[in-house]
Length: 396
Image 1 (cartoon, helix red, strand yellow):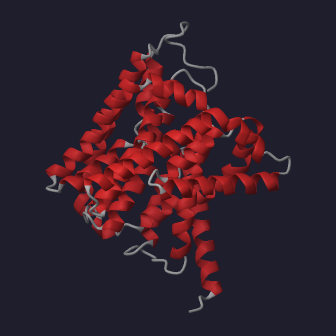
Image 2 (cartoon, rainbow, N blue to C red):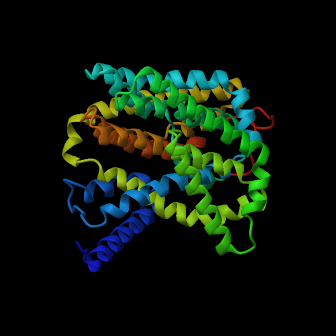
Image 3 (cartoon, rainbow, N blue to C red):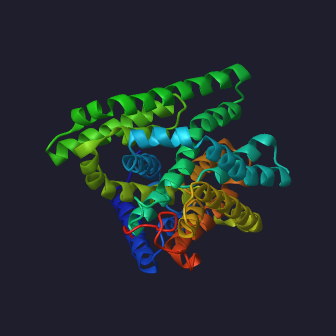
């Protein structure tokens, strides 16, 4: 059955124009555009004000590419040595953070009368902070090399790597796999993740030399192809495409990594916008009012617990008051992994209220987190200067 080309172009062009207008508005309000993209998805999805039909087949693969590029570009900001050092020194912090952030969603699911599996899925939604949102806002604020960055990484990186265990487990449980199959899936995922980390640490410089080219065209095609291949293989073995892309970004070094940032940022922004739009398309707005109160309560509980862990982690690292506040509010934002897990729940049909509840939750924290990051320094008046403990940075 042929599809009217004019309809495709009009719908696709209209979506991009609307996203551009929303991005412009967000820039003027000094907030991330992600919440507005989610709202746009609600407006043009099923049950929305102007439902789209033709371009839905384009939105899904574009959204996957958006997620891959978000995590790959984030990986470019970290070296393999930083990643290993963070994992070695952040075990205690990672465990405390996992318990604190998984608990609100899991307990909320049980209180809502859900079974253990959907409650565990909701726990996954509340657990993982948004590396994509956090990385973008930190970059915009000029805070990528501030004293609190190692602490932030010690919280973010274990969360992302924990998905290598979490996603295979819930995936196996959703299809009714037995204990042996679940353990096998987790073992494969951990083995592949460990191998990828080892390759990034020992052979990242080799990969960087192989992909490098003075031609921007060649370099862009090579890097994009490698990233998509790595993400696809990772997804096939249940590690998740996002984690594969993140480790690929960590592996890339030197001039190849520096040029990749420049070449891929526009593509990341384009496809990431579609990624957040696609999540909005999955939710029917009429499903939101019944879960609005629960979503607000869940967002508040998660934000308070996550901020508390961030403050404690920064204090444990002997950072000053301003850095503690920055760390606390930086970790509040939720986004891509929460959306991925909610999308899994939506396609599996395990609990009808979970996707809209996750939508409310992500929308609230995707707004609150970046806004608090933007004004975090005003929340820490009287921070003393002059010592390393209280000195924050000259970068911002």
